[in-house]
Image 1 (cartoon, rainbow, N blue to C red):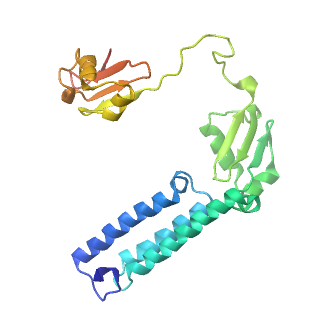
Image 2 (image 1 turned 120 degrees about the vertical axis):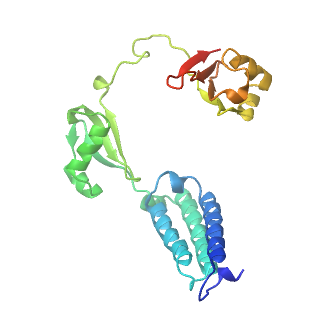
Image 3 (image 1 turned 180 degrees about the horizontal axis):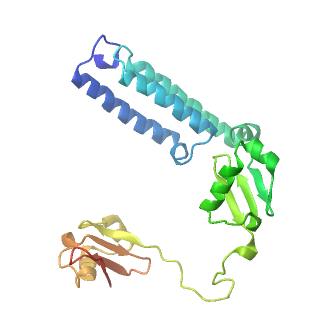
Length: 243
């Protein structure tokens, strides 16, 4: 375990061990911090990500720096991060500091220029975000706000929104989620169990296209137990079979 300490030089194997331990440690550290730290960087998340990256990176490139100190420092920072996240849920004042309220940028088609300066964004950036949402006329925007995570939420005025079946009082089919049940010849046994089915049932479903599950490239199933088998007999076109 000497490779964890400061050394004048490290062998190739010792460098490999450092990298492996650091990789596993970062996986565990990220798991402890939760999904929020990787799904969307906010103020506190950005600070932690930047700090952890620097702490772990240096021992992986400098043999004179021990890995033990970096691990201890990282654990302390994780504890502080979890504590700060807990405090933000319990202490509203601390929460407002870490996650400030959204800033209104557009309301009823009117730009709030003073809030653009407050959010530190330019007019060009605002219009770029509007184009991403396919908004060609700013007057169609009922509300646009700058979120703490650094994104803009845009709401179009109801009179410019497309009609839905609910608006026209039309009956629609219930929502049905489609999920892959066979990928590259490997069936999803947990999904089969969820539907209360077994491999024999699945084999019958794909039988018109494939006699062996291992030959099936892709098959999906929806909530109504409809199986769709995707086949490519010619090597160029995808053919979909329903069962």
